[in-house]
Length: 123
Image (cartoon, rainbow, N blue to C red):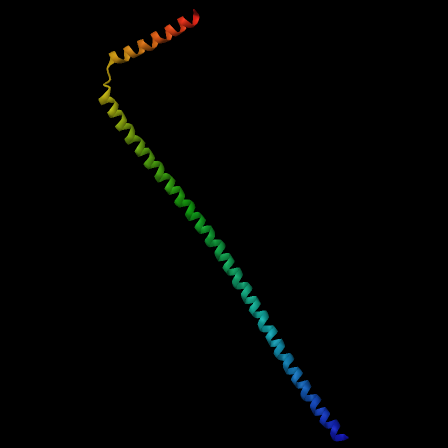
């Protein structure tokens, strides 16, 4: 009977050693998972802050580019308008030379038309 107790004690100690070893490995794994979790969280925060900074930089760059494009378009529009005005003015002057008699005649026709309109309106 004493040998049986000794055998059971030896088996119990072996099982307890195995349980302690498994528990130690479990704690090591838990520690590794927690460390990995912290590292991953830190990496994500770092990337998030980098992305936010980069996002703001790109927004500023896009805004500056849009402003430059707007100014360039305004300048080109003004140049085109000036060019077209000059072309139209030169075309009109070539077709209808500025002559004081034509302007006086046009004004006289308009005044006569207005007077006749008011005359017939009053009658």
